[in-house]
Image (cartoon, rainbow, N blue to C red):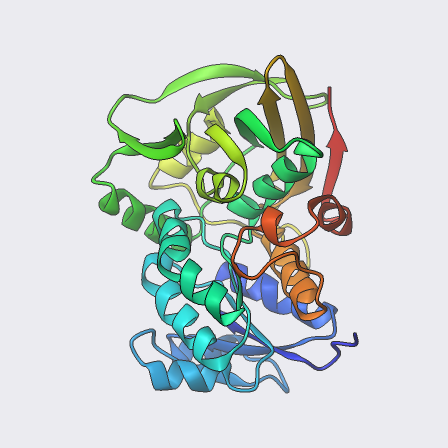
Length: 342
């Protein structure tokens, strides 16, 4: 199916990730429609020939105009606790697929809880957390499981050499902390569990060349929502390298700085996904650069597959449930390179 010229609304198009998504759509021959809450910021990123459509999340009519004629919508505007619900409602009214890049644990849980039944009944396709956090880990776990139908435990370990958060990341993090009253959260015994115990560190042996690194254990990310949404597992743990966690916590850590003409930073990452069952384990590792930039090929590949009918279900579903995980991961090269590990 030729998608050339098909339009995709990018809500939050002037944000850091939104700009990468816009560029990725253009590379695929799709036509981005630039939408967001701030008209002045939209005009600042407007490109020749592209439509700009301001729309506040509390203005359903404006959101309808923003999505009018689009084949799909990608929501890149955080905090998703505020934007996901209204943009999903607009997508349902328009009858088009919805994809977002939310890393907020509670916002993703809300999307499954609030819209799962309605989206399924409507035959709609909605993929939350189709990003570096949530989507990539879910794809890695799903592909690693192969023919396994259940797992005892899943570990997803983020080996970031640094983390320069965007303003949007900081705002979304503040919203999440407020929603959980400063508590930490994990997925254990088949449910989300909120707790007050102090973080702890452990040594994690990444495959070469990364090697052993200190990580903050149970540094929970969106994977604790996406993975158990379709995998029969009692415990999902995500961990973060100490240096990245410190960067995120420090109020004076600067935003990402472009290291090339595409706008990508020099930050590198390795993501280690390990699935445990009985005495066995299966493992896949992903390598790449710039956690924000690589969210764009993840989200745009998802939209492309949805619009060309390469999906496995309808309703609200995570990446691993919606797509052929191994095939999807292979399509991400060279932006993300995936390798098996022992």
